[in-house]
Image (cartoon, rainbow, N blue to C red):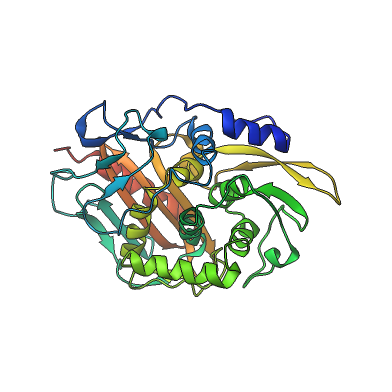
Length: 354
């Protein structure tokens, strides 16, 4: 999906004025009734809906409600709902059809797949061993930013320190670039720009150190006993968690509509302002080939790679009208990562629904 670059004023006006698009084609029906609230699973309207949510003021449509265990009690503002229910419950009976593991042999070093409705484990491989997570970190970064109820329209300027981290990483951003917080969050989740995550942390109430404390406290609140966050980007190899703990993180992230929309946006053309070098166009695409292809219903997506972590991905998907969370860590190559993901999706599709 291509977007014509907008001026800063036009973008802010669009965020305020855009109305909700139609529900994404692969929307998940809550509690089995079409009239109940819906949670979108990607789609062409993801970006416009996320902008609409964030323009409501300071993120009041975003609630932190999932502790990572069992039943998800989801409380949300009605702006993203097809009904006026402000509270709904994602409790379901049944599973993909069997308690036995799906018949695959994953090549990645650590894998966890769960039925997102029942919490049933569908496949595990070294799922309790903490491993570096690379840019999967940015899912937690996004949750902490959104928990703070900050003004998503506030313009932020990138500083030189936003480009200094545990590792050198390629980027098309530079010091002096200016975007609003919403655009920067989109860039962090969709394009996985590391300076975007760093400047979000630096512009947190209390500064960078307070942000890192909030990340680790959030992990503890979700029961992520193996998790540690040393930086907000994932370039720090000390950022670790087990696959099973990352399932908890993805489950909690599903309650943030902005994360759903932004992480499944296929592409976006940014207009980056810079007083020194002038404005420029930044064309960006999602780092997930599955999201870009549109062949699978993906509700949340985040990829990651550093040498210590290997190729990683977390996602929420829906197969046979059943939601699942997939975590893949430590693949030797991008091809291995996506091969494992497609094998899991194919195997899930062969299981009957209940």
